[in-house]
Length: 174
Image (cartoon, rainbow, N blue to C red; front, side, top):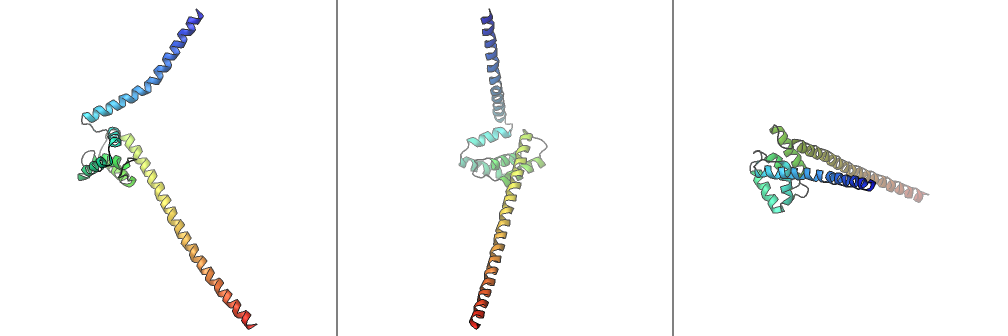
């Protein structure tokens, strides 16, 4: 009797673990199905669009950019442009343009699908641009300091040459 109770508990425990492992996958599948259904129904969702970008070739991305740039203010085009410019493997990746397009989308539209996710992306782009500008400024400051040091070295060499010439003149007189 004890062994059958242990076996029953083991079976329940295994079933519980299996159910826990299946639950997140089911939730992800539901989200992907919702994205696919909303894109089939003509409802724009940024996540479905981003997944579509991942499947596009470079030529298709250029074509998509050309279509979006024909009327960048139309409907969801600012969001699409932002995602297109932010996409990691995009041949037109440009964090400055992505940030500008998403900021414009937030300013012009009241609310849209997955606004929180896009706001987070825009905040990350803003931080990345801030650090990029800081890095560029440090590089410019370093170049200025190097130039200043080179000028100081040149001035010191001139002084050394002058002192050497004066020393030679003094030695010749003696």
